Image (tube, rainbow, N blue to C red; front, side, top):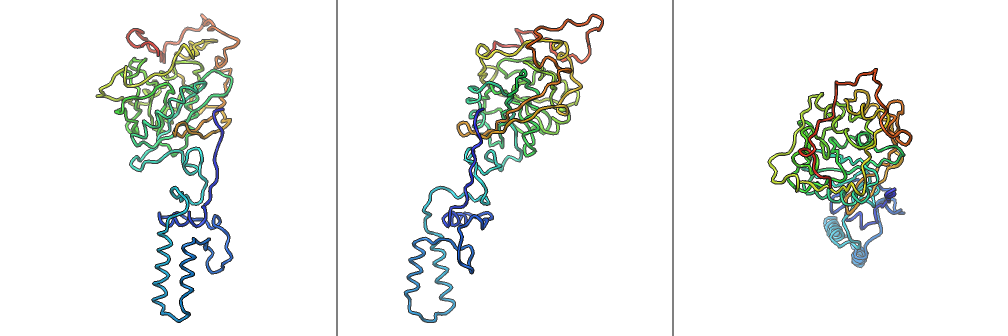
Length: 391
């Protein structure tokens, strides 16, 4: 939907490429990428440079005498070093990548999504749950890529785009992103596409001691209640697996973060947050979502409201059902990213509210079945104190 795969193979370009790779320390060059030759003595012989031909002609003009071995060796050594010192006819650096394909979209060898910083021993998968927010993505991708590159953080952006006809399920999309991002990323960032970090003191560090909530309640421009962990949350892969990811029951907007907080608390994982920043709620992040343009899906149907108020002990990463329709690589203003077009599957017997087109409004609770009082995860909020005007 957003872009198509665009990769191309570029083999070594004759002796000029070989020469550059020799100068700069080539990797293993495959002979299949070199021009064919008729020489049986030197299978790696390539088309000569005009200066080389001139030197060889000069050597042949010498009287046919029997020079000493030392003089001949010295003469040809000088010619070889002269050959290496000549300027290459082509411009640009040598891509000494074992003759592999170069990705014309990212500009890096195939399989390498982003620039790697040797000083950072970790790699972060930036997971963006997504649907119909193209304008926001155009602004978010280059902003976050430049922000993290300035911190020299190894990272790659994964946009998990829900393309089915069901209601939006942010939690399930994050579960998909975790499974599809690969083990080369040892921690993930659950990141909203409409939240741009502004303060460079917000460091997206590897959360070795436990989940790290970057968009803390005292910094987020809208949500300020103590148990809030939405916006931007960093977590190690093993910690995410330990709590079985997020619940898959949250179709529509809201509450999936509150249920995830309950999972972290049960697993005794302490959430830490940034402190001692000079910025606050107004200038730490920029919230670019406009609810007047894109209304949030806050419809409740069937028994959704009752079920989603409580801790989910049945679904999660281990029960996720989906398939990836397509996988696209593209860049937005030099920011490389991967688009995963995902189709989620719904068990209507468990969560009939994944599609509310036929049943709008909550089903009245059976008076014979008392309301559950345990495992309630919905915080009681003073809206004036804990919520700001949405931007």
